[in-house]
Length: 370
Image (cartoon, one colour):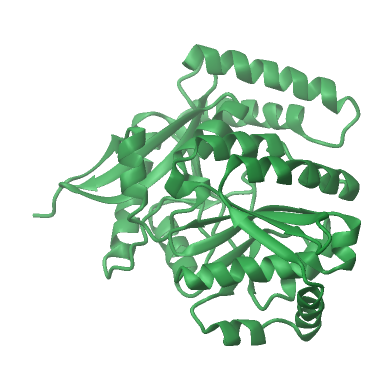
């Protein structure tokens, strides 16, 4: 008789040990990232294991937020659950994990359960989608979809370089001829040098995010050594800081997190040199994939153009998917979520005041839940 499958909570130390066993582990499922993101919206970050007998077959960080005065709320999983270990049983374990998460968060606790799968190459994305549909999830328009470009690194360095678009490779050659100096490390001092450059770069380009550079700087300081970001700075031969990038090396995938460049760095093709430097380290570490971060060809065509010429594949993460609980409470949860999103929506008249109200409401609810 198969062993019982159940959900159990994990403490931080146990989560760090368990997450290191999964090939699909990323900084998006790091303990400190989940806690920090949950605090931003007044939610609670729950870290759970899916156990079959004594074996942990999957883990997931779940952000839960209840609607005051009701027995319901929203439970969200972003890029999860983690179940890929390179074993023949991975697909079976993913299906068991999704069913267990559904039964626990929807059946027992009455949450709307929403999740976004993990983008990738090959069959795993299709495997996730098939497993989610089999577990009773359905596609949802309420979550945020995620589109990215992923480079296959399971090749030689020369093959990866040959896969670059000809013009992208020409710019890289120019950058390498400029005698740029690239340094890399994981110290907070490097992050402090990078941050002003990042902030000025995003301001110049008109980018905005509720997770700003300060959030990632604070996160970096709290991450355990094995999960810390890698920061790269590129200087000119005469010592001027031209650009920088932050990346993450977890599981079998390198992730581009954030970057910045000044006008001289753009002229000297520093972005091309620093991206290739990241790829070289990922190859040296034996990683299989390089995920270039989110893309939006309509809203940010310049970044999309740059990333699309790096020889990767344009992919979507599976989902978003969701399951609604029975009863009228689900409508209260969805209505409250819609109101909260409207208060946080950017680029609207009165946005600063509305976001302040949303932040105050979130902080109050976070204090109650603590």
